[in-house]
Length: 199
Image 1 (cartoon, rainbow, N blue to C red):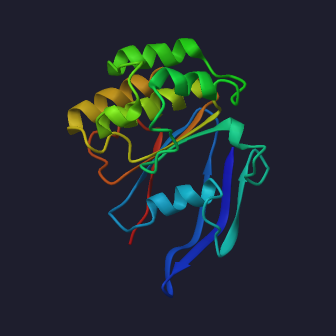
Image 2: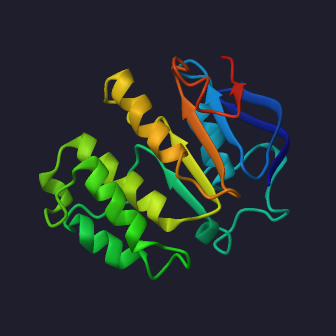
């Protein structure tokens, strides 16, 4: 469970997020929607412990985010935590030792689904394919929590929805997913519920 109470973050004397309360339970896919500048990415970064809130509490399974909880969370953002001089398969070989439930089978399924070159270094791939590598690795980590910040933003809406539909239909029953997107079009049937951030 993710439980957040009284979350507040101020930038340039303006409260971007102010007094936010939020929770997500096992088996839920929660869509977080809002216009540019509404604080979607900031919200996710605070959950991950990358940005410190000015006020409020964030707990994952009744624990504050720390190095000990990272193994239970797969986080995909545009700020790729990848090595561009390594190949797709080298990333898989590297990460499987850090995530207890890492599944090479799931990884290979998404490599095939996304039609990714497995031996090419990431520096040789398009931005869209690098994102797909990141998402394939996130799915293969097989964590309880999956946090996606505006996934497949460079694709056509119909392709984005097709990819998300496939991903969400193959999740563990206890998984909790947060997916932040600017545009909620077509997402109604993919998420359990929606959470809207306003500017």
